[in-house]
Amino acid sequence: MVVVTVPSLHGQDIKAFTTQLGNDSGVGRRKYSDGVVILVVASDRKVRIGVGYGLEPSLPDAWCHQLLTGAMIPRFRRLDYAGGIAAGIRAIIGKIGTTRLPVFQPRPVAVPPARPRTYAP
Image 1 (cartoon, rainbow, N blue to C red):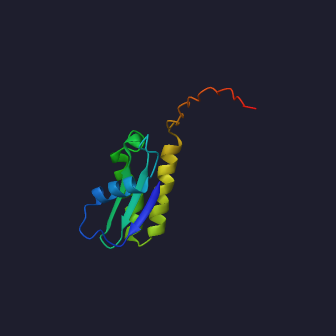
Image 2 (cartoon, rainbow, N blue to C red):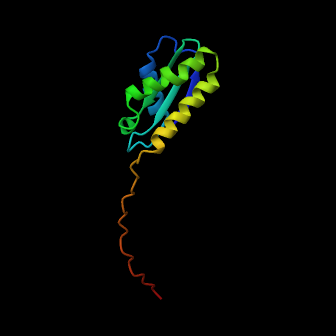
Image 3 (spheres, one colour):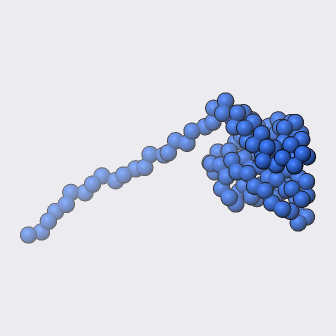
């Protein structure tokens, strides 16, 4: 999970910006697409929680919207950005902490058998 605050998006779409940020920064495990990006754009008064496809069952859009409107945005309106971000992080960790995530199992690497060494006198 990564939390990013930027002064402005300069007209860019917040959804596209969040997705690009997550992909470019390597948030989460690539194989499982289980990253989370919380983007706060204070001057534009925008906030978004971007969730990788691997975590969509655990953090569906409706739940993220409820988290934003119920816990984070009310604090932002009181100019308590740190409190809003902390509330979001706590809720997300609490939610995915109860979810069994896939564990990466490395593939076995085939090692060729050692060749006998012969030494010439």
